[in-house]
Image (cartoon, rainbow, N blue to C red; front, top):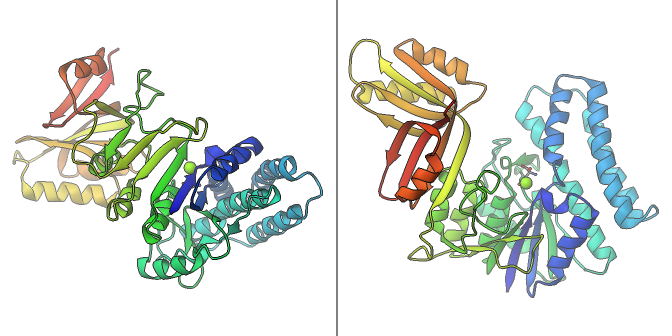
Length: 420
Ligand code: ASP
Ligand code: MG
């Protein structure tokens, strides 16, 4: 039996976190590939580092670099004491990063991003693997970039399944070990240049490995008890969904549920590999399972709230109707500005969409205004309710102005705004 475990940044944010995940690993009664993210908010820190690097602000680069070093070093001394040879190893690896930042950046931001940000996962996995070995949990550390091959689409690289499959099967043979530690989120081109798979991409790496090794299951260990029917940060009465079908989970992540990275589910579904979502804090609890099932065991309503939305309505200036030719012009403008449409609705004279607020919106509105009358509402929220009923609609829209709504058999969606 082979299982793949994935631990996110929150699970390894300090020395106790690392001890906890190793404890979880020792309880697994199977061969394991363990995917570990960068520690805590390291990837965010690396993004700030990159901004400083690109604006050639040496002082800021050094300051952020020092903070990243201190965070890791603090955890290392807590785990290994002050004299362990691992510290030398780690410092050497950190110096490779320092040296990289001493050169001037190339003009390709996405390329530089991947070369620098990938250090976050290398650091975390080196630390976790060395500490596990220190306390006699024998394991092998694998640089995933040697086996996960991608195209050259930096920051959003696509997996080369043929090569990856060949290399992974050879690497994760379990001939000499029963536990491998490796990185999520990163990979490399056929020329061994580092790439990344997109923010929060470690779940996807877990799924790629599980698919290729025909694993019995992938478990994603999180700081929540499993998949809940709403985000507990805005809905106090959120409850656990014990079992969800792949297709329902894909729908949920499409509507914006953030528990699972959307790309994660397909590689698992294709081989019917169950995905467990469990809490690393309460690791005895079962959590949720996403797997093949005809019916959803629960018909509990599920709520997804996307905040910071803009609701835009366009109508033709020339009194024409909203028809195919107009629509294709409109879509073209959205795709040119890389603005993703979260909801759309049309009538004879109006076409409305809900989109995330962001950098390119002003330019988008300007481009639309050339041919259309454009009206918009900022600061709105997009609420999606799966398996809705009248009571939950009433409860969740109470005290809100409903700007637009869309009902299908299974899904109710509302563009809402606080009443003031
Ligand atoms: N460390 C990366 C990120 O924070 C990848 C991941 O954690 O999934 O986006
Ligand atoms: Mg993460």
